[in-house]
Length: 108
Image (tube, rainbow, N blue to C red; front, side):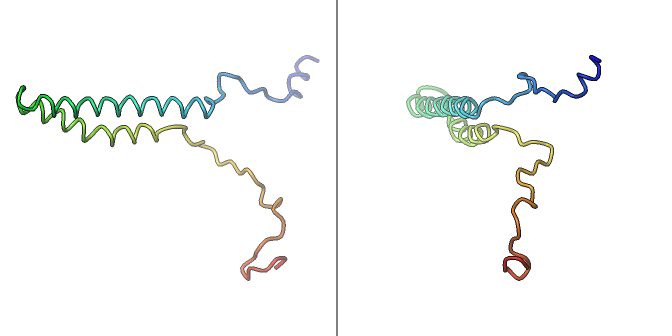
């Protein structure tokens, strides 16, 4: 009887497979973006302040870092929640009812 009872029960979703809440995901990505932009500002400021005091190649590396970091930061900030692999239809087309057919009229 216990085997039959397990077959009739609905499958329970495990908490470990639940996705991260959207607010936490957005906050994490914003924090990472702001840290990267802070590093960019520091690179640029150091390049300007130390231009004549350190070798030029080092200043150029700082400037290149200041130029490249925004691109990398945007890519990483937008790499947030992943899309589902399975095709999930949230609305069954039959629930929408009679819609516009090829002629655009209801009930065609």
